[in-house]
Amino acid sequence: MNVLVINCGSSSLKYQLIETDSETVLAKGLCERIGIDGSAITHTPKGGDKVTTTVPMKDHTDAVKLVIEKLTDANVGVIKSLDEIDAVGHRVVHGGEKFASSVVINDEVMAAIAECNDLAPLHNPANIIGINACKEVMPGVPMVAVFDTAFHQTMPDKAYMYGIPYEYYEKYKVRRYGFHGTSHDFVSKRAAEILGKKREELNIIVCHLGNGASISAVKKGQSVDTSMGLTPLEGLIMGTRSGDIDPAIVSFIADKEGITADEVVNILNKKSGVLGLSGGISSDFRDLGDAAEAGNEMAKNTLDAYAYRVAKYIGAYMVAMGGVDVIVFTAGIGENNAIVRALVGNYLTCLGTSIDPEKNKLRGEEVILSAENDKVVTMVVPTDEELAIARETVRLTK
Image (tube, rainbow, N blue to C red; front, side):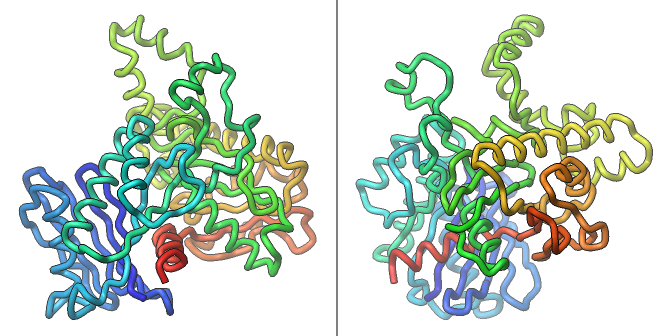
């Protein structure tokens, strides 16, 4: 099967065409600045060069049409016609409590996704636009929605309820949902496979450390807790997001600065995290690492604070699960940043695990970092959310 995987943002559209029998990426690309001047598509066929074309895209339907044009192009295409696309898998950020697994998209599903718009106002409307654009361009092709939140729907209520009046849950469904579920699911499964065990036999902590970052406690194959909350703002210190703070800080800063609560939340989302904590050095951990090595104290302190928060969550989730067998690093920072892994690893010796300095130099590879006799296995498993979406699409449509 050829599955087209779509990840739609408000002004962008990422895509991959995956041949699922061999799990080969035939082509991938990105449409940027949709509906904005200077829109462009970047397309990379398997074994070919990246080609960027500046072309007007007034909306996501134009973008999907361009994607199909590139995929079927005589020079840079990888298929002869649209008929060779067997199904489309869509990343949908928020499924609320309605979806505990991926689903084939129909009118009822579309209405349910729309009902979750106020829980993810930046993402779900864009996801819906992407789905509708694909339906317009590819009528009759089966489409599947894969939700970021679905994997975490196995959390018990003691993990997802907040200590606020219950009426807000009843009226507005205010609770922890968690995100990056597709990645947490994929990586925990793969970690068990590498160790030659069933996921249902293991307690696994997955550290998805990218610009957005979250940790999950996967007990015997099910997510029982995760660090992100109602929105992706809760939890770890991230690239530009604050993570956990005292909620009273919002009104305190609003009063002091003469700004609204919404403006403070915008600061917490876009100007905080390691970017804000470092005094504006960077949200990129490579830059922070370089600055720290050059002796910049703010960069050092920022990396220390980041690693401390990660380690604190790992300790909490070990207790929540009654023990841990495997700790996994994944996503951009988790897979590639040896400094961050080492800093986190310094806290983990009390759990009976270690990080080998030589193995820790590897980037973007599956590797067991801990010693053979360590009580807890610490490892790196690269995530592949697009492949996970393609697998779910095959499962539901083949």
